[in-house]
Image (cartoon, rainbow, N blue to C red; front, top):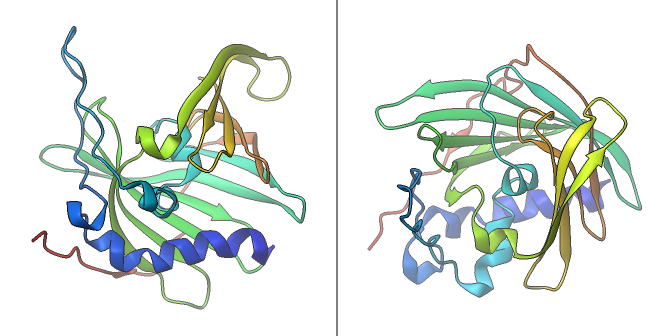
Length: 244
């Protein structure tokens, strides 16, 4: 189990220093909330990320958020079964809070890895209206360690982090709690690894019914309402470094 979780934890913690500075010379350009473009007006390109920083940046965006689309209804949750060759365990994803701001709304999204030890990942995601979501901060807590929140400032669906589209098709989800029409998409990362995601309107929180690569598969099993924050302590919040 540690072999599955530790790469995520390590990537998040080791990326803290570099992610705090979203300066162009650091390879990560700062992201801003993107509003929908006017009809007939091309949407601006995503901020560039240096090729040698893609894997590091990708580790800062939860995969369900990267390949799905946030459906910010506070209290909704969906539980996934995560399978690898070594372990199988549940992860519950939920929208547990919102803070209206002048230009957007900040949502608190939690992913509760029900493992031993238990791991909780918290993402603070900003969105203006129906615009694209931006991951502002990310925190991870593994008891008894103090949670640490780091600045991220990345578009949740950044094209370079998703990878190059390979194919897509409509699919029928004929069984289970999320039966209905779905959309299957496959992306190829710079490493050559492929990620396949199935999205469906019947799945809350991210709209992701399943997500799989060569090592891990996520499958949505059940959903509900009434989710409340699991984070019970104030994270140590690392500041953003000033852009030179």
